[in-house]
Amino acid sequence: AATGVPDRVTLGIVTILLAPLAEESLFRGILYTWIKNAGFPQVALWGTSVLFALVHMNIVTFLPLLVLALLLVWLYERTGNLLASMATHGLFNGLNFAMLYLLEKRPG
Image (cartoon, rainbow, N blue to C red; front, side):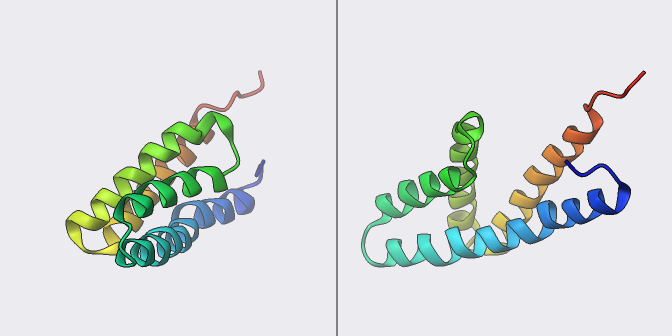
């Protein structure tokens, strides 16, 4: 875990900005759109959402990440804008990042 301030800032940038940008570009922007445009909208929805949850390799967070991925597809479809899902993904990660450090046990 990141313990020093520089490590936490770096982890925050990756978690809140870079990961949502990369993951939304790949999962919603490329894979979802490609599979949907190939004529398989349900496979696109469920396949990319399950894959998104699996890529995080954590059985405890699988279901919440699956729900998030389904929401991100809905948001992308509703707005027609990948920035909407990127911002929501970043907000989700940011809230989790903040909770991780706010709820950590302090010695003493």
